[in-house]
Image (cartoon, rainbow, N blue to C red; front, side, top):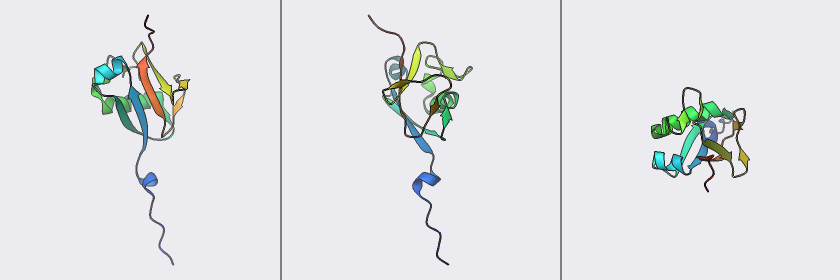
Length: 105
């Protein structure tokens, strides 16, 4: 009987989501981007808690852990095309932009 094939790396390691921090989020974190481990599909509250674990400096000014949401004045954009709403799901491999929703002028 032949041996079973080895497990692929993707079946043994968590998937990743990549988050680029812009504006106040970047200033608060002192980082340009974060990679967070997620399970597919992932809700926005689950992502918020993963971001808080990856970068505690974002908690409060950018991440509202009490409500499992972004703090007022911040938005998530997926792959440079779609602004995410509360019910949207994050997929492994998504590239997100975390930015201020305020317009300058």
